[in-house]
Image 1 (cartoon, rainbow, N blue to C red):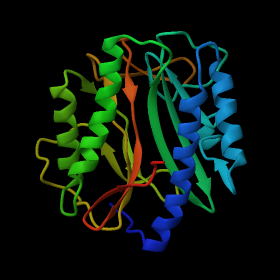
Image 2: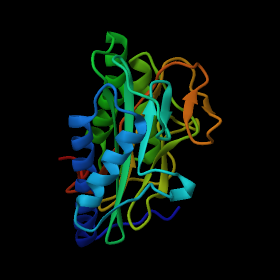
Image 3: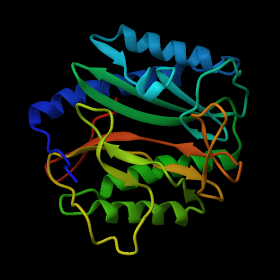
Length: 253
């Protein structure tokens, strides 16, 4: 597995792309409201990215995806396609955004409430957010990626949820998806194997939370991913760089 080590100058370029992602998510979080359609949310996101110096919406056309913003509503956990569905009070909406600038990529995601949501949905969103921040806090050189996946899975399960299977975090740099793949669960019996985290690595962590069943199901649009339990899910993501013995969040305002 060839996991690239980024130079400080390269991390600086990734920091710019990820700042653009963070600013776009902040903009959407501030202005997305009940009554808007998912297509309008996507348009707002794409227009904001276009207003940034040298920025390009990296997801538009990536692997054939038709939009710049993944809009994942309620039961859709990731890869939701924007359409004419209107947001309602009590919905939860996942927003996943990629930006490319000068050949370097940024990537992050949030799940946000629409109006007043239930306590159950607040806890569901909190699980993905808190899992992400926990994982970032424990990152250090020498920790194996499988150990990180194991700790993420334990944290999610202790909250009473399960991680979505079949999808994962990933490296990032000159490509939107690089080595390594970072599942939110342990795929092998022993976590003390495989590559270790090193200074200068840059990657995306993205807990994807299901309520009961971890098995993924792809809907008829060929993109939207739900859990086989049919219940609501949540998703958070940051791009981090390992600098000075710890993880620095690049995709944060």
